[in-house]
Image 1 (tube, rainbow, N blue to C red):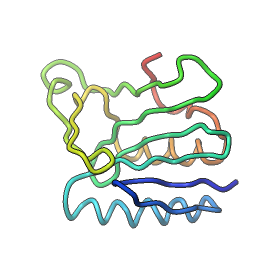
Image 2: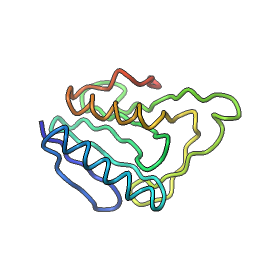
Image 3: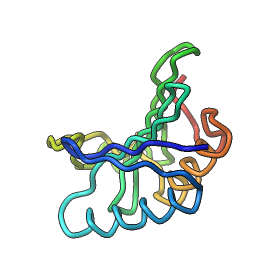
Image 4: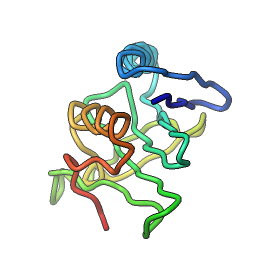
Length: 131
């Protein structure tokens, strides 16, 4: 399976293997650590996509589906109360964005979700989704 990655305003790369996906996300994470975390879209030929944020200890995730309803589903993380109210700041396609921490997951969970999405083409089952 080949996936296409998009980030920033016009950055992109094809990833023909799971290893290439991992290596590219590692490189992008290092790049993001020099500034602000940023979103990366993992797009499959089916038209489905998974968006994650690299470069921090947490990530927000969104799953986009051409065939299922709802067509866009966001993640729900383990943080509640005041901790969940804190804002997570990142760049989305080159623009400043923020979301409450309650809608983020640890980066290790997000990376596992990216691996599962790449290998199965399905919404990752290791994440709690707001659906």
